[in-house]
Image (spheres, one colour):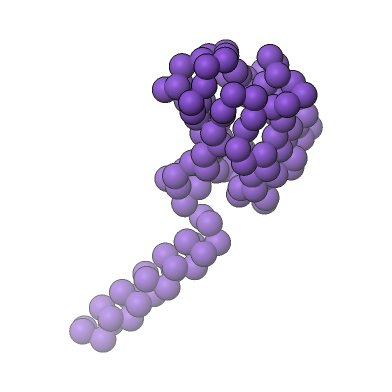
Length: 123
């Protein structure tokens, strides 16, 4: 009986490890990647994440108003779902989950030349 419990425990730990390495069950609970908005730039300008992960845009040390708007995305992604409010509040946050692999391109509509960034979502 004792040996059987040890085998079951070992199998459970092994299964949990395999799922964690594969990324199963971790995307929804993982801490979002953070992109900071400063006056006239995003940092970082390129983010790579796994499918199902989130990104949180965080306004930092801003005086001017800024926003986040998706301009290019994989087929089937509704761009209107990836648009923040325009804000100059240093406490404003905007968080989105990326469910579809591919490349996403974002701009600030007020500063579209200076403020651009890309998100690459892996499978």
